[in-house]
Image (tube, rainbow, N blue to C red; front, side, top):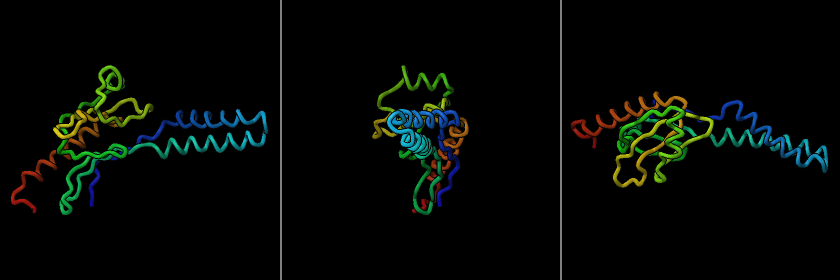
Length: 169
């Protein structure tokens, strides 16, 4: 039984969904001169497809404590990637300007990035595992302070599991 202590889906803002629907409708406008009916049908189908694609591809950011009985420790999930909290170091909450800098001039090409353009803030988490080529994770979040706090709680849980006596195995 995994205990999720933080969960967030990075859904687009309503304005992004409206813009996506308009982009889909523009596809119908391209077909409309050939057949008005086909233009309307293609426009509606494309608009719905774009909105559904935006919603379905929205990544989740999750921090879970794991299950002591199964031997799984705390984990950070960002989209389809996961890393044990024991392999993470310090965290830095990034506001909109710091996030732009972290994605641009201060970026490291080796870093793992889970970002969506409609989420303007996030968290930079140092990776301390020497075998991991990524120096840090850059994770977009609308609630970066809560994410940092959840990682702190998960890190404490991981540390207490590693230092408990007698060992569980």
